[in-house]
Length: 474
Image (cartoon, rainbow, N blue to C red):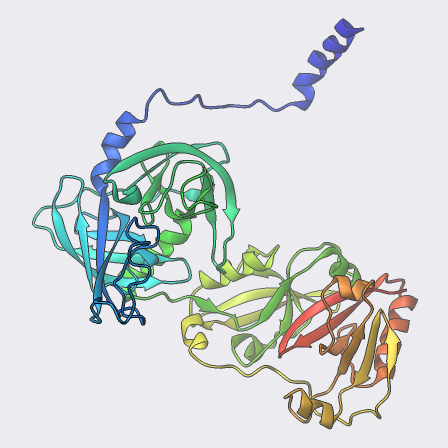
């Protein structure tokens, strides 16, 4: 029986298994380290910081002197003058004429920035530009001799399991090399443009801003953060992918700042329940929840549109759209394909610049004015709702002409509670049509049931921010 089973397994293998071409572990990283190390630099920053409010001396947390100075307060003899603090980090040279990449948090707030090269030269660095959204900074040093530099590689070609090598200045100990593999791809930490490679190559404090190399000596990531309960490496490090960094660096080098495209919409992912409620064939795309004043509104995009393709790039998630828009040309029209009322439409949108838009405060869009319904209540979909009156709007600090149904209670075991609907939320649309009266919502529920839908799509506002929620129809 075992032989037969084994024979069957072998017979099936060629038909169902694709060949795997695995690279063996390198015998040594010595040649690679020797090749790229001259391009890596140590960065020392100096900043003047205000004296502690208690008048005590500045003692690093965890220092052996911390206990000694614990009671050294205003009545002691500590100086009240500003103090100079130093911080250490890493970076790497990307051009022979002295452009250097590091993390923004390495140099943020610094009065002086000094770079030490692999051969011991110390050079004063000037800040060219920073991007807080990707935590990248570009420096420039002047050197009588051309500097050894390294190129960016294509981070999109890196696979989980590929060998990588990190070089930097961990814990201020000087140049150090560590190796590991790519543990995961596409990690997000907190930013809209995050695209981190996760690695188990040892990364510690001081490695920030240093390069992560592939085995060809190309930079495929900038070491930025670690996940650790102790503050030291436990094998979970994050490097911002080179395909994000290189675009940022190009803009910082050319303009001294970033220039990202801006569409001007609020969006959310299309979840399976939202797709079902909207009658979509697949749960992908970016669902527009609001269109304030901006490029999208001027072009005719609407809340409820699902963006499926942007400037020739397929949009599967909000993340896809955010990055594609950022990389698209400012001031030029780009084609946007949306699903609207069950049909695909192509709309040309002239993009603005995100940095300019973020400098302005755009008021949240409010519903069109209309006659409020008489106060009454409706219990449906696990919600208790009332029409928004002028008095309610005043109490909730909303415009007097606000329309919609305010949620006054949510059944704790309902689908609505499970999807985060809370008292105080305002339902402004149901089935992608405005609701001002309780009857409007009842009609939308009846229509959804008649159409054989299992859920109803609601547009809910909280503190002016909208989002779509698909609730099961009982």
